[in-house]
Image (cartoon, rainbow, N blue to C red; front, top):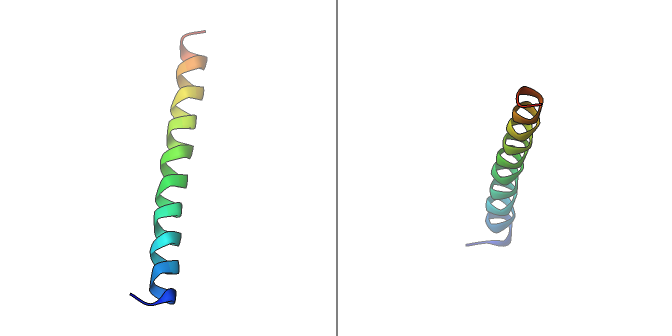
Length: 36
């Protein structure tokens, strides 16, 4: 695996983790608003 490929893979993993993180944060916010 070349350096460029490893950077692409790392970027993709980071993007997926960011999306999951925002999704979880959004769900927590919605839940707290519903149950308040």
